[in-house]
Length: 400
Image 1 (cartoon, rainbow, N blue to C red):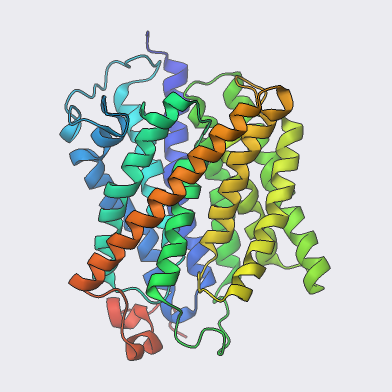
Image 2: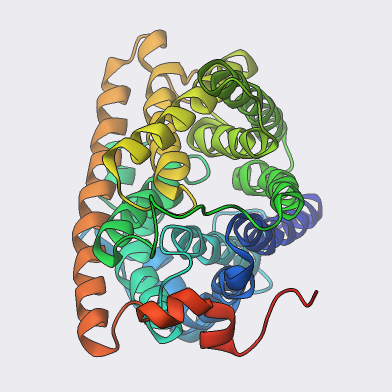
C-alpha cells in the first residue's frame, strides 16, 4: 500500500498525544495520594516510559505484532526491530516504524494504570520487576490475541482502541494486586486524603486531550472514522463527568471536583473499545452509564473492603468491561451489534472480555508471588509510615 503523507503526519501527532497521556496519568495519580508518596507515585507511571520502551525494542513489538504463532503470540521476526521499515508500510499508509511507535505508547500506559492499585506501599525493586514481567507475560499476549492476528481477532472481537487489551486487562490485574499486596497501613481507620486535587484535575485534562490521539489515532488514517472516534470520545468523556457528579450528588449530597475528573476518565475508558464503531448518540449513552456505574463500583469497593488505592478496578476494569459489552450492543459502523441484528457480536465481546480477565488474574497472581519470594512486594510498616518518597527515593515532593 502506498504511503500517505497526510496519514503519516496525523499519526505522528496521535503518537505524541498518546505518549503525553502517561505523564498526565502520573499527575492524575500523584495528586490523589498523600504528600509523602507523591514523587514515588509519579515515578511509577513516568518510569514505564523507559522500562517498556526498552522491552518493546528488544522483543515486545515482535511478540505483540510479529507473524502469528498458534493464534496466541507473535514470533521473533521483529526482535530488535529487525524487518521494521521506516520507509514503507506493510498494508498500511504509514511507515512500519510509526505504527510500532504508536503501539508502544499503548504498551507503556497499560502497566502504569495498574500502579494506582498498589500506590503508597510497593517496594521500588518489586515495581521494576512487576512492570517488566507483566508487560511481557500479560500485555503482549493479550495484545496479540486482539490486534496482532490472534484467536480473538479471528473470532471477530471488536476493540477499536483498547477496551479489552488495555482497560479490562489492567483492571483485572489491579484487583489481584490490591488483594495480594494488602491494604495500606491505617486503611479504613485513618483519614487518607489526596494531597493536590488541582494536580489531579490537570492530569485528567491531559489524559482527555491525549485520548483523542489514543482513539482517533487508532483509525490509522486521517479520515472519517478518525473523525467519528474523536467526536464519540469527547461526548462520552463529557457525559461521563456529568453522570458521575449527578450520581454522587444524589448519594453523597455533594458534587465534587474529583468526581468530575474521575467521571471524565470513566467515560473515556468506556468509549475506547467502540469509539469507531458506534454513533455519537450511543456514545452519550455509553459515557453516561459509565459515569454512574464506575462511581457505584467505588462504593462497592468500600463495602467489600479491598484497598485499590486509586480505583483502577472501578474505573478501568468496570468501565472497560461495560464499554466492551456496549460495543457488542450498539455497534453500527463497520460492524453490527445486538441492536442492529447481530446478537452474536455481544457473545464474542463477552468471550473476549472474560478471556482477558481470567488470563490477567491468573498470570498476575503468579507474577506477584514470584516477586514476593525474590525481593518482597511491599515496604515495611515503618517505611510506609515515613512514606515512599523518603524511604525509597530519598527526596520529598514539597518543601514548606
